[in-house]
Length: 106
Image 1 (spheres, rainbow, N blue to C red):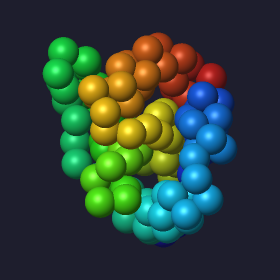
Image 2: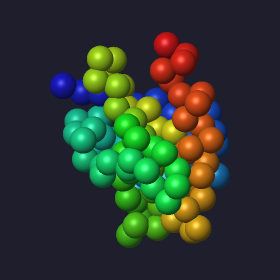
Image 3: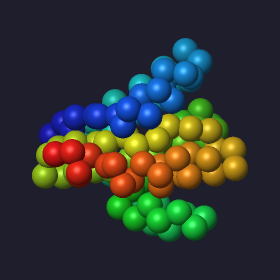
Image 4: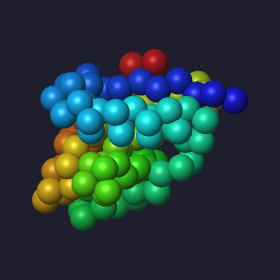
């Protein structure tokens, strides 16, 4: 069973701003998520950011993180943030976007 991949508008901008070689690595991971969405690790409460229900997947030797949520009923993997590991910024960005998650839009 194959899942669809959808990106939050800000995650799309983050992806677009990355180097071409890193984009290829991210696309490879996104393709893996289509078939195995449980691949990433569960996040829960990460450094004070409540990301319960979200998962993270590493890219580029753990330098980049993809933060996403699985919607089993819709066969959807929703990418909420893509970012560098530096100072947990990707988790901060993700936590800000959780309120505008796809749940509210569907």
